Length: 430
Image 1 (cartoon, rainbow, N blue to C red):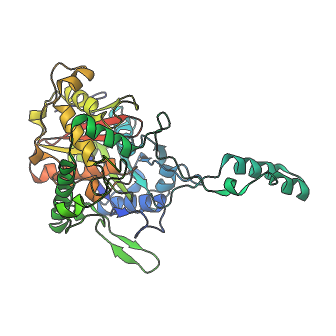
Image 2 (image 1 turned 90 degrees about the horizontal axis):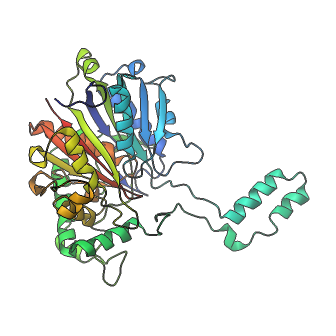
C-alpha cells in the first residue's frame, strides 16, 4: 500500500456534489456559498458524521465574491459543523478543488488533523462585476470628501464610458490568450481534427447520459430544492441525450471563425455547482466504522509556460504522480481527465504517449497510450459541466465510486488549469 507524508494513509471516505447547472439557469439566484453549504451539509447528514469531529474544511473557488472572499469559512459556518471548525480558501484555477483536497490530505498525513472536508464551489452566473479605474477613483475620492460640493466634484471628470462595467478577465494576464484560443492553437499543433473533437464530445454526452439513467451519477448528487417554490433539481442540466454528430458538426467555431475547430459543442459550458469529499486518516476511518472509497496514493502539480501550450501541464504532472506512486499506466484501471475542451483532452492523450513530452517531464519513456475504454467512462466536463472551483472534487468522487463498482485497484486523474498549470493524482483501493 502506498503512503506519502509521514506514512499516515489518507482515506477518501465519501464524496458528494450538487447537480451541475448551466450558468443563468436553475441556480441563477444562488451564490457559490449557498451551493457549497448545501453540499457540505448533505455530506455530513448522509454519512451520519458528527460535525464536532471535523478538524478543518478547505474549499476552492475561482471567482470569489468581493463581499465574501473567504468562501471556505462561510461554507463552514453551517449548523452541522458549528462555528469552531477552522477553514481556509484556496485557488488554483480549474484545479482549485484538487488543491483543497491535497491541502487537507497533507494536514492528515502530517498528523495535524484526522477528519477534513475538502472541495470547491462556483457560481458562474453570479460573477463579480468591477468598475473602471477612473470610476473607482471617483468613488474613493467621494467617500473621503467632507462636503457635498467636494463629493460632486469627485464625479466631475467621470465620463459615460467610465460607467461601463468590467467583467472578470477570461484571458491569461501574461499573454492575453483565452483558454479557448489556446485549445484552438493546440489542436492545430497536434493535428486534432474537428471531427475528432465532435466525436469526443458526443461520447461525453452519451456516457454521462448513461450514468444518469442508471443512477451512477445521480447517486453522487445531493438534490437541491430551489427557493422560493422548492423546485427539486436532482440531475445535471447540461447533458444532452439527444445530441448527434450532425448537430455538433453544424455549430460554428468560436475562437477562430475561419479556420477553427473549437465550438460551444465540444467545449465545457459555464456552470454553477459545488462538490466536496470527506477525508480521514486510515485509523480514524476504520475506528469510526467507515469503509473508505479509496486512499490517496500520490499526487503531483506541474506547469508550462502560458505562452507555450497552455493546457498541456497535466502531461508533465501525470508521469510524476505515477512515479511517486511506484506505478505505470498499465497498472491503472480507470482514468479521469478533466474535459475543459475536447481538443485539450485529445492533445493531452497524444502528449502522454509522446517521447518529446516525456523528455520535457524529465522521463526517458512516455506514460503511454491511454485506453479509451477506461477513460471518462461516465462522461466529463464537456457534458456534465465545469464549475471552476468544484470540478476537481467531482472527478475525485466519480473516479473513486466507479473504481469500486468495477472492483479496480488504481485510478489516475488529471486536471488542466489556467496559468499553464496541471494536476494529477493516483488513488488506490484495498
